[in-house]
Length: 216
Length: 216
Image (cartoon, rainbow over all chains, first blue to last red; front, side):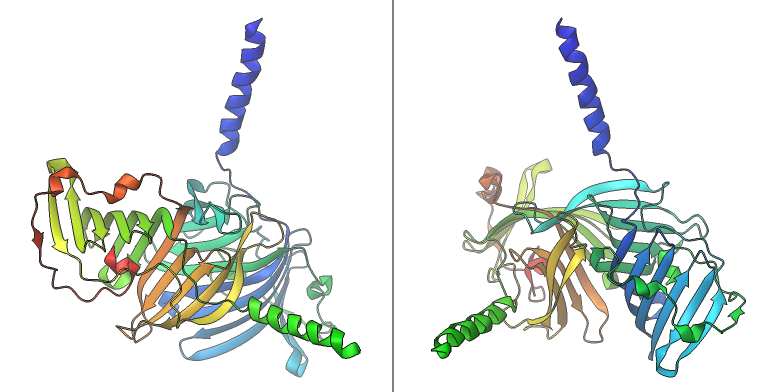
């Protein structure tokens, strides 16, 4: 008779221990927020406000940055299903459209990433003073360069991505913050009317985009 | 008559707007956890487990690190009231005691730090997916070097400290994690008996410690 009690208990213990090992994950499909990009090798710092729609495969990003002594500002709309990259200049009502060949990629932890460890940013003693996060590492498929990712343990929300050169030097660091789930204004993914009659130019001859960040 | 309603409403609006401006703060007086230190200029990486007692003015720290190709491990007990710095070697039951002249400093945001901005690390949409934090900057009193601090908005828990050279290059970065309030084993602040008979050497001729981190 006892065995009837023991088997379910053992099974639930096995299942709960499996459940505790974090698995690669996809971030929420609708996200808005901000990020900073730092590329020490290029003396590049960028601040971006973005809207991300994994259902419609659309990304809108306003980027302001500094490369060396040059500052820049870009308003970009990436419509992956349509295959067009819009560079929008509201101040003079112009638009540059280029073909977008890249596949849409979800924000998330790649399926072949390796779980490193779980930790609390800050304190776990009192609610609101800490955040449970997971660290992952791996090697980018295209470039074979190592990366390190920090995502929240609950909800798979991105916090940091670091990419390194094969020599182990920091190549690119991205920090995400002020994220909210959902799209406040779905119009952000609709190109302005002054883009309608603009011809789509062939895709730029740039190095293959490696990640969500590169596409921005 | 209306003025009797208007005055308290104006007062409460003024007070609530004051309350929302973050103020420099002290971290919880009893903290245990881990931190990493990265000094790119010295090719130095250190991982530390520490116990911090601001009531008794005691710090215990186990540090393991790599400077260039050299690895090191240090077990250090800092008793500020007694004015002694213990370097403890359990493996051969030896102890080096040096005079500790530095004043105890609380972990926290210095009173003259400048509030930069408040943001959410991760997402504020769902509980457990984000952390409300404040960024502060300022100039270290002794070295006149600029710093940037990230502390939780609630509880003043340290997350990151960055120190820069006067040229704006990153000098030192500290990340705190897995913190808990309280001291699990108060014995960590009691030197082992094999230290009792050891003579206290004069303080080392080192550059003035600038912060909590330097003292570790």
